[in-house]
Image (cartoon, rainbow, N blue to C red; front, side, top):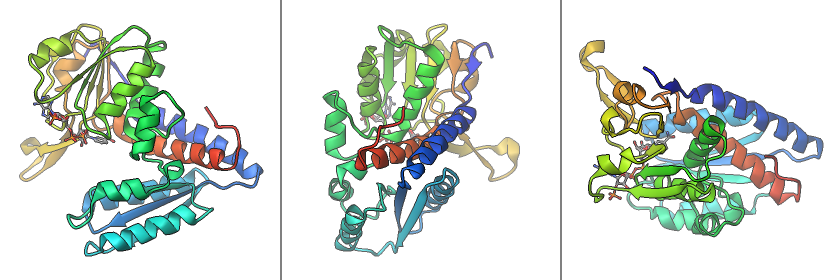
Length: 295
Ligand code: NDP
């Protein structure tokens, strides 16, 4: 590979240290940030994420509140829990783990969360604030991507950025964040004509598609920075029968041969997402108590 590997794991560890310092500062003022995570059902991947979030929250010196509801839980029950957490002064951040069971309208649940406690940044008020350039709680995955890009490239102003994917949780907020940095932003999606040609213009490529190894090295402008958000589990017969491995939306080897810098999967964007969740919780706690918001 010729491109520099962007070490998301190391970067996330540094961010968690900075969060820990900010938590100490708030604790000295008598404020202990608290994060409530709500898990509905038994989805194994969600259980792993929730456990990891709880552990890292406590390690950062914050309070972690975990609420588990059965997958038969009704929307009314879940909304009642959200209302209780909205009213609880020791809870500064609320995260309802997605996906939710079919009987529950996820949009209604997200809208029920107090926007000031919406540390996932999915509430329409936060999406609108981000889009209109106001202080917002920003979705964790794109925020993590932006922090890595700034660290890698410094000033992003004037760069061509292509975001592949337009979901509310990754693609759209990523595009807003890059626009805020004065990039020239193109948002590509499944109807984009000539996706390879579009991506080839980019100084910054953010792939958030959910298609294993879709972006190949011949799509990448030499020297471009590639952020691979995708997490896809694929068969890995070389590791034994029935074995699997995680790969990104970019074909790592061919992209790394052309890119200036690239995030690996795993170990790139993934670790940054939880670190940004902790950072958002500190921001929410500081704002709730009229304290200065840490950088
Ligand atoms: P969604 O499925 O919500 O969105 C995927 C987007 O990709 C859509 O906008 C879709 O276009 C577009 N797309 C699909 N196929 C193509 C194609 N052939 N060409 C161009 N665009 C295409 O996914 P998410 O945004 O939720 O997640 C994207 C990926 O990121 C997934 O792999 C997910 O696992 C991963 N992820 C990783 C996180 C992390 O912490 N690292 C966190 C969140 C997600 P259209 O809108 O037209 O359908």
